[in-house]
Length: 223
Image 1: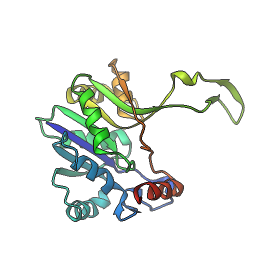
Image 2: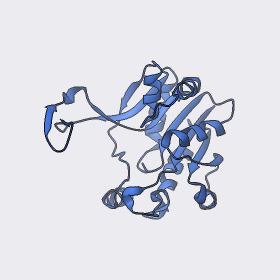
Image 3: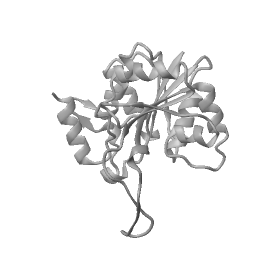
């Protein structure tokens, strides 16, 4: 059994106070609906767990009903940190979940084909992240605006979601986190000493964090 955990419980601080970007209108659907529909249409995904802000659970149920998301298994409230929201999603998964895919609900350009390609790898590897090679020169700045070094971009990737895991691997990694904080789920596996692989993405699978991102996504998805 494969469960997708879609995390859409962030504070959306760069969108402005009181804004929940997961429910902003994108072409003709809320942002989070695009992600849910991609997993709904992917034959390799059996169930979906949606994690939203506590005050958005009713809105989430309405979106699920409106767009016919039949794979929805649970809608649960998130926590203060992303990792708390992911843990809430994992807790809502059925015990027969063997593989889990964690996706940011603010990445609406994910496709069923990308998800299927990721699943092919997850069935034989413990942890896999979708990502893109960095093409820009990357400078390291320790304080203020003074450059202290240039990174070797040949070794750097911009990591995205979905990220896929054998369920036991991710559960064990989260149990071992303790007080550590992570910015993505593969980092939890790394801290636990696990191996993480990268699947290169050629899609425009960016995360919506600003109004400009929303406008770009509208152009791409509205074609």
